[in-house]
Length: 147
Image 1 (tube, rainbow, N blue to C red):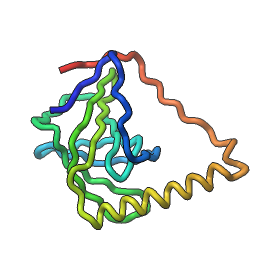
Image 2 (image 1 turned 45 degrees about the vertical axis):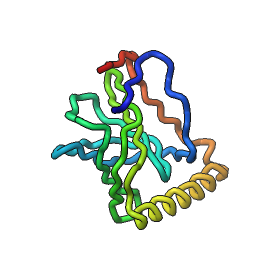
Image 3 (image 1 turned 120 degrees about the vertical axis):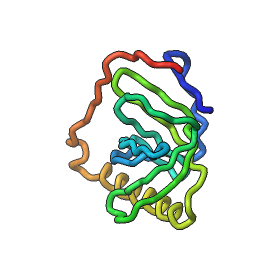
Image 4 (image 1 turned 30 degrees about the vertical axis):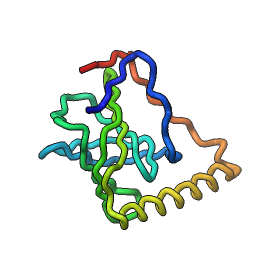
């Protein structure tokens, strides 16, 4: 089963692939229910997503994901194992390690990540990039629920 981290020590960073900051919605399928989640970061082997905190009837750490990458036009389907959950007052965050993904979908994901990294690198080097407004998300309190 997955681990739940409270206000105790945060999980160690054991990532082998660099995650790219992103911001788009994915669908997490748990049983017969679809949960709309917001992806904060993504790599070729996993992702971190958040949704509004509410009960979720997950009986195992395995979830199905439909990832609609911006500008791709096709959905990528993957199964993944929830590595950890973090719940605060407003959001339920989950880190997922992909365990099953079709080769074609894996290739599309890698190509999309590579292209978005190039575009991001170009945008950061642009002279007007320094004037981009920052977006700050405030999460009141750090009360975490532990099961």
